[in-house]
Structures are given as C-alpha cells and as structure tokens.
Length: 135
Length: 135
Image (cartoon, rainbow over all chains, first blue to last red; front, side):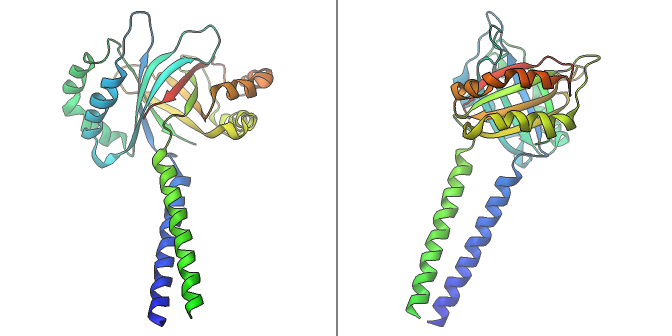
C-alpha cells in the first residue's frame, strides 16, 4: 500500500513538473525570436493562390529550415484598417526562427527552387521583412 | 490509507485534465484569429521611439480592447530579407482579436486619443492591415 502511494506521489510530481514547464513555454511566447515575413503586396491584376501556398509552397520552404524553425504562420489579407485605403497585402507567410544566419544558410542552396515555385501560385514580387519579436 | 490513495488519484486526474487543456490551447494557436497589424514603413528621416511604443502606446491601445484581445505583439524591423533592398518597416504592432467588429467598436471612441499619441513616438504614418490567420 505504501508503494502505491509512493508511485502516485511520483506520478503527481512528474505531472505538475510537466504542467509547469508547459506554462513557462506558453508565457515565453515568441519574444526574442526572429521573424522572416514574406509579404505579398496587393495591386490591380495581381493574383494569389492561397490553397497552393498553404499546401505546397510553405511546407516546402519550412522543410528546408530544420530545427531552426520554431513555427510558421500564414495570414490572408482582408482589408486595410484605414477606411478608403486599398488592401496593403494579399497574404503574408512568416517563419519564426532562432537564428537568421542559420536561416540564410538553409535557404541559400534552395533559392532557385523556391523562386521557381512562385509562378505556381502568384504573379506578385514579395517584400521580405526580417524583424525581431520584442514583445 | 484507501482515502489517501483516492485523494491522490483525484489530484492526478485533475492534473492530467488541466495539462491536456493547456496542450490543446497551445496546439490551437492563432488559427482563425483576426490580426490588426499596424506597420510603420521605413524611410529616410523617419524616427521611431520603441521604448515609448512598448511601455506607453501599445499598452494604452490594448487597454481599450477588453476580452476581445487575445494577445498583442511588437516587432522591431532589422533588415530587408532581399539583399540591397531598404528595410521595409521600422516596427510593427499587432493585435490578435476574436472579432473585427468588436475591435472597431472599441477603437472608434478612442481614435482621437490614439492618434494624438503618435507624435510622442514617431513621425511615420502607419499602414494598417486587417488579416485572418489561416495557419
């Protein structure tokens, strides 16, 4: 009976420790990470195939980044937040990475393949912002 | 002794349930949320006081949004991701909200106060993108 209680206590401690760790990861969030945001400006006559981008292009690029990639996100532009202004961007794909040097080293040898894939989903030349998450 | 075991089991179940819930929240991430991204384009002669923005302006605006606000982030522009291109944005502040209608209703009556605060940290006119997180 004492053994059962002992095992229960060990399990309980492990569980609380795991829960605490998870909480910490959530709290830490994205602060300090580097974002590479690939932004597709809207203009008359420009097209963007979101389905291809989500299912083919972004997974391909993400696959090049290995453990340097924390996560990636995709957003679809809906409107300008300022009345009577045109939509600024049709779509933005963002890679959250630990190191920009490692990102560049991973993308370099694959740049031609990435660029060749553009024509499969868009006729827009993207703007790319490298930024640091400060909060 | 049986009581102790029973209490241990109840605690353990509660703990695992809480841990599972937390995991789920993390996995769900930002998908489906609306982002309001306030983007400050870089140009010669433009200034941006990041410290004021982080400690005064963004907390003020976030305070207007109530429970509609899931989180907000701040990023500092470092470089263009394309060689020999100028930095696209000096800074971006982003509100992740559940409803754009509720966002607009909350910001409307405070628009003058928000705009009046701009001069305290920047001489840039921001671009605002409303987008939906799809992944």
